[in-house]
Amino acid sequence: MSVIGIAAAGVLSLSAISPAAAASCPLQKTGDGTVYPVVCPNGKVNDKAQPKLAKVLPELMALGKTATLSQVKKAVCASFTEYDVNNPLIEGALYFQTTKYGWSKKYANWFNDAIVMGSGKKVC
Figure 1 (cartoon, one colour):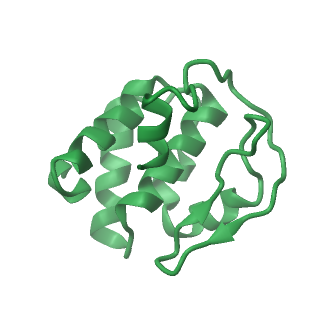
Figure 2: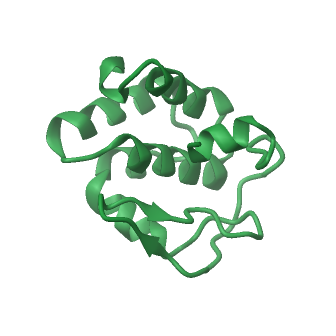
């Protein structure tokens, strides 16, 4: 189950987490380049994850608190076009940014709905 899927299932609550200051917890990296956890057990974003995510998803990670869904979609599509990224990496970045900036859950849910249908690339 994806990070966003876990949150949607109620194990983690995106809506219950207000914009969070950074924290630090051990960062793991999978063989496909995905890093986790992007949010530490205390509910704050993992400051160790941000540089890794920004390196491979610069447009998405450059968005701030006032980002619109349209801007998020454009950044995700740019990531698929310009970089070698995968769905879990984008999910992690969306979860990180949603937690950090208090973005609406619809930003992450939009992408999660697309990957349930097969591939995040279909949204572009």
